[in-house]
Length: 52
Image (cartoon, rainbow, N blue to C red):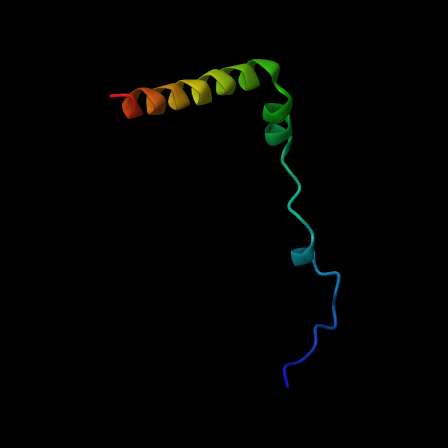
């Protein structure tokens, strides 16, 4: 019978905390605007390939 975990609140059970840079990039309006257009351009290219 496997041993039971006696430490239920180990660090491995908690999600990673985002770094300051990650939080900044998530909240940065210019970065989000740029990512929006990059993703839209990729979708547009995919659609153009499928219509040939």
